[in-house]
Picture 1 (cartoon, rainbow, N blue to C red):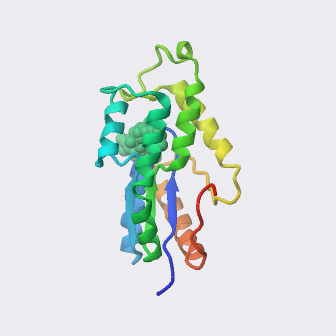
Picture 2 (picture 1 turned 45 degrees about the horizontal axis):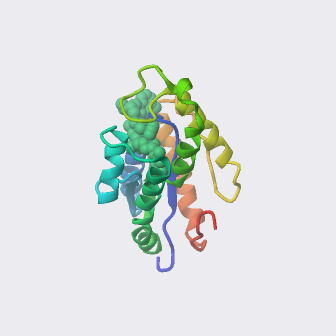
Length: 188
Ligand code: Z5A
Ligand code: MG
């Protein structure tokens, strides 16, 4: 219906919490239910900025901490005009990580290098070790105190199917609630 905007639904969480799996399932289910919905992910590795980020994450390239932080931010900003356009057109955006990851991962870098050394086999990309991820988690908890954002916490140890049902139901409610609210700006 004219004038009704889409909702911005962001999934955040530590490495391998199941975000990408749930984002894909959610978009499929929303579309099947007659909603207009698109999937976005950050980092979006296909742009020039995204390719630099990807090289950094794969440890093919070293970048100074502020520089990589700003590249992650720029990678989101380069998508903002399109995101706003879609939301105004009534398309719901399901976003696999957003600015909260930007804050949480950069702030977790306060971790002492000796603490991070020799950690278990979490994954091969940068940041994929358990105590770094613990710091990230604490930072997410801190960010969730912002009551202007409608955070819901999921227990990621549940089955893919159970989580999907829960997330779908919250997403449908959120779409209803968002459609008559003006689009706000994050952290302004
Ligand atoms: N980063 C940053 O530093 N600054 C920023 O501004 C942004 C990001 C935006 C790459 O992100 C890195 O960039 C990331 C944060 C940083 N570093 N770390 N860590 P990414 O999103 O490209 O990659 P990732 O977060 O490392 O996550 P992931 O590996 O893509 O995890 P996931 O999407 O949460 O999980 P998944 O792919 O859906 O599932 C992982 C596996 O578990 C897979 O085999 C599934 O089938 C399985 N799975 C999923 N759900 C379940 C359940 N419920 N039960 C059992 N098994 C499951
Ligand atoms: Mg993922």
